[in-house]
Structure formats: C-alpha cells, structure tokens
Amino acid sequence: MSQTDGQLIELFSSIQGEGLLIGFRQIFIRLALCNLSCRYCDTPFDVADSCRVETAPGAGSFFALPNPVSLDVLSNLIADWLDRLPGGHHSISITGGEPLMQDKVLQGWLPVLGQLLPIHLETNGTLPDAFEPLVPFVDWVSMDIKLASLTGEPTPWLAHEDFLSLASDRGCCVKVVVGTETTVEEVQQAADLVHRKAPSAPLILQPITMAGQVGTAAAHLFRLQEQAARIHGLVRVIPQTHAFLGLL
Image 1: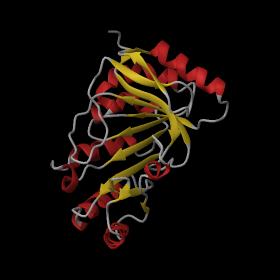
Image 2: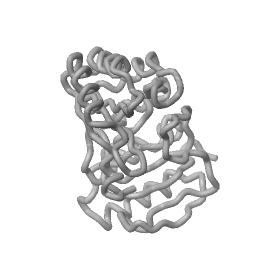
Image 3: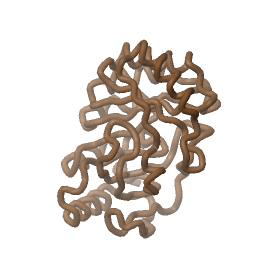
Image 4: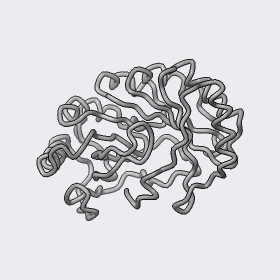
C-alpha cells in the first residue's frame, strides 16, 4: 500500500451539522480507525474491504469502492463532483473515526485536496504530534474535548492542551458533547483550557443526541453554559442539526 493510499469509510456530500461551519455544504471524507472508544459514538470506524461513495453529490445512493483508496482516485472523484455542482461546496471535511490515525496518508493528501477546496479537520484533539506537520494545510479545525462523564474514560486534558496550542490560529472551534451526566466542573475546566490556549475560539456545548432527539434538559444546558461563560465568553449551545434534517 502506498503512503497516499487511505482506508476510508465513506465519501459523501452533505450539510455540516456541527461546529463553526454549521450550515455549509461540504464534501465529507470519513476515514477509518480511531484511538478512542467513546460510549456515545455512533460511527463505525473499523477498516473494511471497501468504502461507500455517493453516486453523485447529495444523491443518497452509494457504490462500493475497494479499500485502500489512492489519492488519484479520490481527487478525481472530488474534481468530478465540483464540475457537476460548481460553487455548491464550501469545503472538504476530513472526519472519522479519528482522521489523524492516518496522518502519513493525510500528509500526501491535504496539499492536493486543498487545491480543490479549503480543508476542515474534525478531530478528537488527542494526537498533537500527528497534527503538527499538517497544520499549514488545514484551514479550519473542529476539536472535540472528550469528557469522562460521557466517554467512560479519563479526559485527556494534557493532549487536548498540546493540540489546541497548535490549532488555535487555524479557524479553530472546540466542541464538547454534554449530557445529563456532565458536571459543571468538567465544563469549567474545558472553558479554562480554551480561554488559555485559544481565546478567540468558540466553545460549543453540543447536547448529546439520543434517538434523533436532544438528550439533555434545557435547564442543565443553561447551567453549563452560564458557568462556562463566566470563564470564556464565546460559548454557544448547538445540537447536531443534521440529525434533525435527516442528513448524513
């Protein structure tokens, strides 16, 4: 396998439903593999023999493409979509799984893909060493803080801190999935981290989605937002809007 051959889960066109670029049409490249096992994760990320590729932007129908996928095949598919829908896409979202698990592949991909559309990286923010050589090729970063109350694992605060130091000037936002179990102290610690390392980055509290509905009571969201905003003024509450729109 070449250094520019990647293990994909899917390639599709949709509306971004989370974070700073919410509402923009993007081409989503979902990579396989993840270094975490969050309890609330609803995305399969194991490597498979093939990935699924949308037959046309927004078609909702797919064909199977053998894994791994070469840069030539991927860039040609995206270029074809841009020809079919000129001006329709704002950016390319690199997502997962955890895309930085395939950092060597991305080192070959991003300089090329970035010539087609700007690059938006969605990441769990735990692999700063993998991210560092990619920083010049990324236009926006949506970084998750993985709180122990929801993941079931200790929050990787030090890794998040190192990552955010690199991402702070790349159109960064920080997303925190919150639920009924989430404590004020956790959200305050997240707000403090963002305020120190990326003071211009919005902190987005994202209520967990359960069965297609917001799974966190409004009163709890108000309390978390109020306490976080005492530390970091740029706090937003944004649910997973694509879930309500019935989009991928």
